[in-house]
Length: 117
Length: 114
Image (tube, rainbow over all chains, first blue to last red; front, top):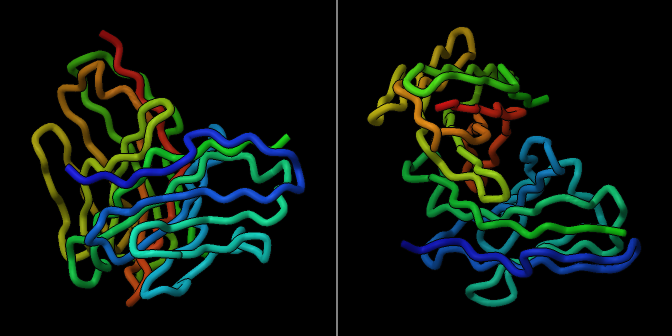
């Protein structure tokens, strides 16, 4: 069964450094998402991406964050200058089509644990 | 703003008993309500979902009910087993044209004791 994959599984960085988290969505999916989960807390929406552009973003997704689909398979999240409070598990998700047409389950990747020191 | 409340935060049951987790959503435009199970250190996995045009859905030992008027939805697990132990998250979405962002509840840690 196809799965969303993410690399790296764990990233440790110094405050102020740039990080790029990588995701490979399921190949026939069209809608892509990033969520984050601070340890012990709920999963929070960051951004959604469709047709090569951001379709919606949350208040968390400020100018320090950016997303890109540089080729036909990868979907990346970049944090330009990391802060301590960016430490969290970052999940990528993809779905084949939106709710209005059905079959819109979002499949989550295994996550990247980001630790900012 | 959009919000999903989830209760209880922890739930302990004996194997074979039933477990019920309840969620309330704020945005009346929400029309899709998935439930995810997350085992320790792993990704959230969809276990069941329901759309706003349906009041109840069952899948073996799991059922979900939706009350649109009250903006409540609940997860029911019958004949619980130790492997049901995990954190369960409800979520809500209103299904836009090009985005289906999920708003998650705060999670319920379910422990099933043998």
